[in-house]
Every structure is written in C-alpha cells, then in structure tokens.
Length: 184
Image 1 (cartoon, rainbow, N blue to C red):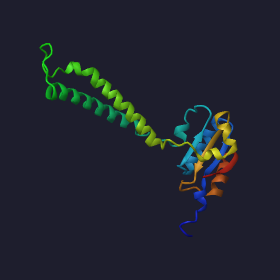
Image 2: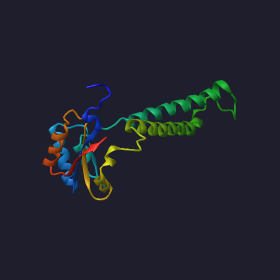
Image 3: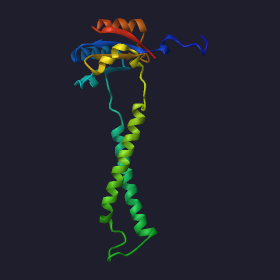
C-alpha cells in the first residue's frame, strides 16, 4: 500500500448504536468495556448517572492545573506587591513598615482568582481538544435524536479491538438499534 492510499479504518470514525433507554445504554457500555473496548463515547439527551464510569472515563488534570495556577497567582501577586512597596517605590505611609503584608491580601487574592480562571479556561480547552466545531457523529442522520430522546454508544476506530464487521455485530448483539458505521 502506498503512503497516499488511505486504509479503510482511516475513512471510519467508528461504529455507533442507538438505544431507547438510559438503562440499555449503561448496560451496553459496561459490556463493551468488559469486552475490552476502551476508545468509546456515549451520548445522551440528559444526564445519566453512572454513564461516565460505565465507559471507563478517567478524571482529567484540569483541577490540578487550576490549583497550580492559583498558587502561582497568589505568589506572583504577593511578590509584585512586595517588590513595589519595599524595593522599587519605598514610601513610608502613615508610619507603617514598608512590608505591610495585611494590605497585600486583597490584591493577592484577586491575582490568585485571575490566574486560576485563566488556567482553568486554557487547560480545559487544551485537554478537551477544543475548539472542535465539527464532529464525525453529526454525519449520521439518526444522531439528531441524541438531544431529544435517544441514547447512543460510539466505539471509535482507533480502539485496538475495533474491526468494522466485528464491532457492528457486537453492537447488534448488545441490542443496539440502527447500528451503523460513522464516516470520518
């Protein structure tokens, strides 16, 4: 095969099955995870308790990044005020010592909040792969019902266990209705 030819899996995003109830979706996700599929996603029109655990969702590191951003913001804000009032522009105001740290608390807090919020936004975008204005699942006409009343499980083609025919048969065996391949 030449480098310019695409393999069949490069033209396929995955295999998708439609389910009628959240219970069917959770059962299908648990069976798919138990079968060894790891690269999959589930779509539902409402929050479904236990769905994230059923597809093997792992916590991301956004909270840790926000903590680091907040600590850096607080240290940076305090250090800036220390530098301004003690080193760069030392003024004795009202007989206070040059290092009057209680006056630094509001600015230190605001710098911590600012850097935490910016870090949260940037890390969330980066870790979620955003912005993503287009997703291949929108190529399936039935997927319009994902925001109304249907539940979907999509096993992605980048999963090591994925084979087009085998995965479609597996999803049909789980009771999936409208089982189809999702083009990339």
